[in-house]
Amino acid sequence: MVEYSETEQQIIRSIFSDFKDAGVDFVIPRNYQQLPERVDGGDIDIVIRPDDLGAAVEISERYGFERRSTAVSRIKGLARRVLEYPQETIRLIRSDPTIVYSSIKDALLPDRDDFDELAAEYSEKKREQGNVIFHFMNHLAYKSPKNGRKVRVNPLVEDLLYKRSEYVEGVPIPAPPDELAHLVCRGVFKYEGKFPDYYINQCDKLKQDVLSNPESHQAFTQLLSLLFFEADDTVLSHIEDSRYNQIKPALISFSGY
Image (cartoon, rainbow, N blue to C red):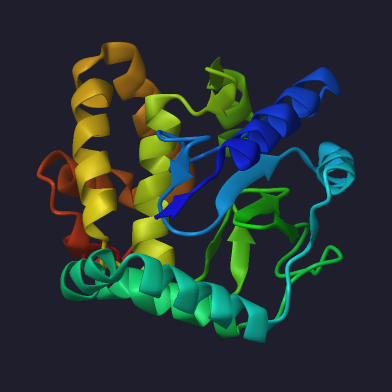
């Protein structure tokens, strides 16, 4: 977890406000609950409409944000967080080793900037200042099990994410169906089916609201159909039973996926 100083908190608020004033369409798809005071992990994920990505980067750079530093600097930053929060690091290693592995892997990977094409039409940028790291993405995309490349989702999934989002204390957050679908996809594709404890807990909270509300339930099943095609019912049944870590094996064995 990264704790932000009062100055950093104000910078985050100001940048989000400037985004809104400039007409930048953006959403924090996950891990927004404690912003701007703190964030679990290291980055603040921000999904931005492609036409607004350049403006968002420009606004952040006005506040002194720069391209994310080299791998050496990132490793130093990771080591600093380990030293600052040793007990939390031990807890994560024991309970969620995939999170630790993912953090180390991200630190070692080269920067992906300047609209680096990871997949058709998908690009991402990172800008940082001090402890604050913005991870800008122009599309929702998840790692393909076939080749490891990120693949953009059906454009309607993105449109619904923006349409249903709302500002809460200056932070644009997703509607519960959209957040739940995003966490499920990240658990299945980014974490290779091994959902971190945070994801399981958050999915359990969200599904109570989503599945008990007819309108939200319908919205969520539509998203599953767009994301998992004919396997949507299989995924839904696993979510209903909180069998998140069995979703990927079920998809692998599903003949129509």
